[in-house]
Image 1 (tube, rainbow, N blue to C red):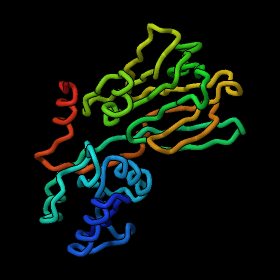
Image 2 (cartoon, rainbow, N blue to C red):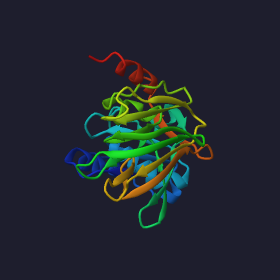
Image 3 (cartoon, rainbow, N blue to C red):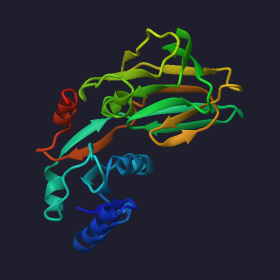
Image 4 (tube, rainbow, N blue to C red):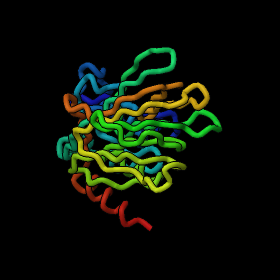
Amino acid sequence: MKVHFVRSSNPKSKNAYRDMVKMYGQNDIEHADCVVVLSGDGMILRSFHEYYKYNIPIYGMNRGELGFLTNRYTKDNLLLRIQKARPFRFHPLKASIQTKDNKYWTSIAVNEVYLLRETHQSAKLKVIINSEIMLEELVCDGLITATPLGSTAYNYSAGGPIIPLESSLLALTPISSFRPRCWRGALLKGDTEVIIEVLDNLRRPVCVVADYVEFREAVKVKISLDLSRVLTLLVDPSNTLQKKVLEEQFAT
């Protein structure tokens, strides 16, 4: 098995990278069978964005902070651990963004796509679900569309639900909703198309963020699961994501 190692800039990650490359060697991504991320969740997200076109799995070992998506770090038996790891396969989100200068961009997202106000002014958003206008005007700080994998991240911090990983659902969660005050979000089927239009975008500019990729002065974004693309995260049998998601729902 050929491995391509990825690290971040923190000292723990750098030291682990040095040790692991010395032990197992470093292979070019074009010839690798697996990407091993020696960092935290943020670097795993970046690796999915950078390497998804190679269609190879990602195995993370925690040399960052929380490490929700990572496995325990040890130097020994790496290749055997990868072989015994359980694959978690999922569809990422696909975001198609139009900006104020009439340019069009696309991005995938593993965790979430969210809109966020750029100034002190609240955002005003129109929410369209499967071609039907569901909210003529949502006044808020922003709006999150999250996958099951990303539902424990920003979505949960904003008051959204944690979604079981096996479900084909999306969470639509407002950030500091001002009007309508009573709207707390929605759970949507996985084949739903979400379109969000930015109202009054000159006075109330909004950015779109796909995981960590930012697009300024957006006027419209179309979000859906990319059912044509499957990404794979490898997890140790003793450290299943399903268990972590369940534990998050009972965290105090």
